Length: 220
Image 1 (tube, one colour):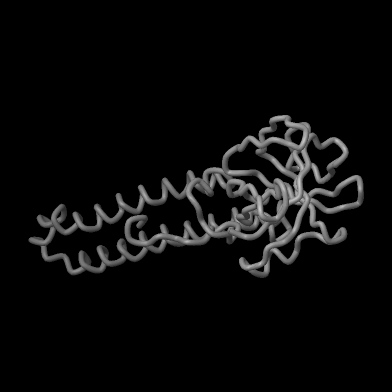
Image 2 (cartoon, helix red, strand yellow):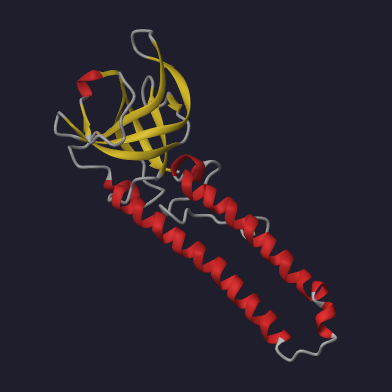
């Protein structure tokens, strides 16, 4: 139960769980989890109350009564746990089909080099939502921040950063190394698209970005 056992990784995409992760990325599974815990509590209450409810039956000395209670306890619990595993596998398979790249769903944090490496702006934590193929033949990661943040560019204009496209500054290779270790910090170029990103569309035109900055990214 939630108060006894606390999960630390997502059963669907495998990343570290943070508040709001399931509701944001796996809303249908989040609703199933809520119903599962409710049903489990109801089942345990009925299981505990069963001997008291059926006390009058004990006077009949029915030899089948105890085996029936034990069978109910086993089948009911097995059904609940089995349904939980089946639903998790179902949504996990759907997620893997829609997100074949292992880094999708990763939690990351980025910093912007505002005026040199010694003066940086730390952005809110974000989630990798997709992979984008740039018209410049570069590979970008689509990242959605947990909450928007306002920044100023070199021309003094004010921009709100929420959905970002991020590309490695070292060639056109994707940011594959970000999967391997939380200790790696990779230099990147951070772009803010003119229009909201479509996470289901794999194309991205960096020339349409309204904000660009150099920074770094690492797993959180």
